Length: 458
Image 1 (cartoon, rainbow, N blue to C red):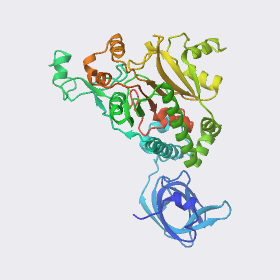
Image 2 (cartoon, rainbow, N blue to C red; image 1 turned 90 degrees about the horizontal axis):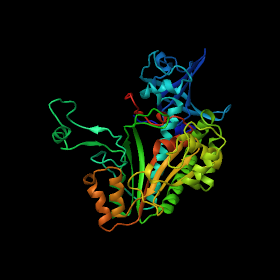
Image 3 (cartoon, one colour; image 1 turned 180 degrees about the vertical axis):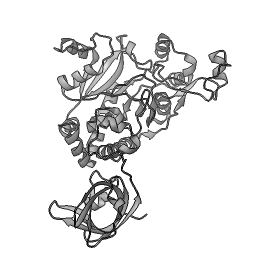
């Protein structure tokens, strides 16, 4: 049906004095003897438009139109409310499109986020999730625009794979057979499955992305990844969205420069395009959010060697839950101390011990570390993990053997090191984590439409 977005009604004056049609859901309802007021929202804006019902003029309003959650079509004239300088609509005709009974779950003005997670199909109608998902859309567009403006080719890597890009084994199996006791061995089972071998949902598009970069130069992927990690932290979900550029003729310092430029671009674009949402998040979820984001945009990120970070942590006058020694994998508490207490801004941590990093990372001349980097940000911790990739065939083979990996599964990947190998680098950005950083939302389950976590598949 023909109608005008509420965003256009409340943010411009071009419709003042004109008759318009708007559609939306009732967010609030107030009634008095002579006049009634409804606030309508259609998802186009964080703000609602007020519908004024003059009972002397409009005598046959369906009582269902005043109930929270009901969907309406309203025809009326746009007028300026001089008391608060907002645009509202004097209703001439109201049609109920969808009734909403009294058990509508969003009767309370404020509900806990934990409660709303139990109804993901309804929570998007709240101000919080209305704002979150609009910001998510804007930030996704900014990421695509950043890479497209710089000549990167957008690649769609497969979601079903026969190899583990991370070498961690935390993968969801893909099968058409399911449980069947007639198969006596794993080999027999997989040989009868759809692909004739064991397959899984992809944890990363990196390996295929590297292949594409060896012919296209600069590529990026933006799609879902899946991790069967038995974790219930505020930062982990089993299905998340992943941005992964892969760049030929690129070394670690170049990669750090690209990652910092991208983060600043996306944050700045969000601040420009979503001022109302940013104001909302600052008021409700994180005081000082605007100042934090301006600091990101206006300052250089720190670059700190892993070894130096370990020294800082060991000297810290803080009792960490997890002890710190060279060679350990840093925990969230360590990452946040580095970013929030020591540097008070985003930090690229570089040159990690090779034993705690993936097989494909370039080995440094010291024989102990790899040319890897994690971008740590205040309030969240790691949001980017990347590295220069190992371009030496023999070193890559040895790294894979050291980790007990089957070389046959990676024959195509190894061919890249045989046929015209070049220095190349890439990183992965967890999309939900940068949304958390920019909105102040503390739990990753609250920045994705349907969070998939251990024991939960709503």
